[in-house]
Amino acid sequence: MGTVSAAVDGIVALFSLIMAVAPPLFDSQIVLPRRLYLAPLVGIHQWFIAEFDHYLVADPPPFFIGLVWLDLAFLWPVCVANLYGIIARRPWSATTSLMAGVYMITYLSAILGEMLISGKATPRLLQLYVPFAVFAVTAVLRGLCSCSAPLTAAMSLAPSAQKKMV
Image 1 (spheres, rainbow, N blue to C red):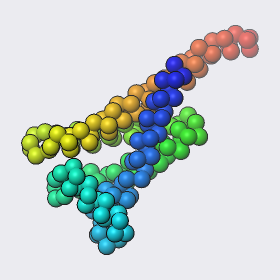
Image 2 (cartoon, rainbow, N blue to C red; image 1 turned 180 degrees about the horizontal axis):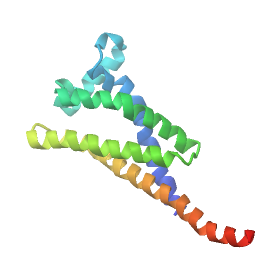
Image 3 (cartoon, rainbow, N blue to C red; image 1 turned 135 degrees about the horizontal axis):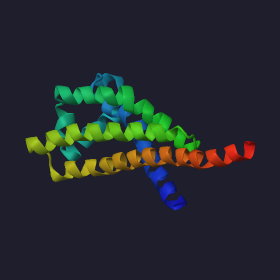
């Protein structure tokens, strides 16, 4: 069980790291003026659009701009906290994992729904989002399983602790 827990922590930490770095450096280029960014970052952003034919990033519709603002305002700080919580083994990291996972599921539902219904998405673009879906489900499961373990342990200790005191 420890190996599975460590693997899940590793997956969630890796994607939390990605989400702690990508939104301020790349996603924010969708909503902020490009002149604020170094040329190499703008070049990587342009390469990403061309490589994956990401039509939502190339010409963002209003709903996508709103999702990017939510990424910057909500998901980015949660992922930074989550990364710290996992590395420092803080018990509250289960809550931040749950928050990040539920947000990603909601985010991906909107994005993938638009991509699938519009028919504009290439298979390569859809495959880009598969790891993020895996992360979202893994983060939710980590949050749910980690939250129930301490509660179960506390419940099992409570009756015996009361007996010893009496």
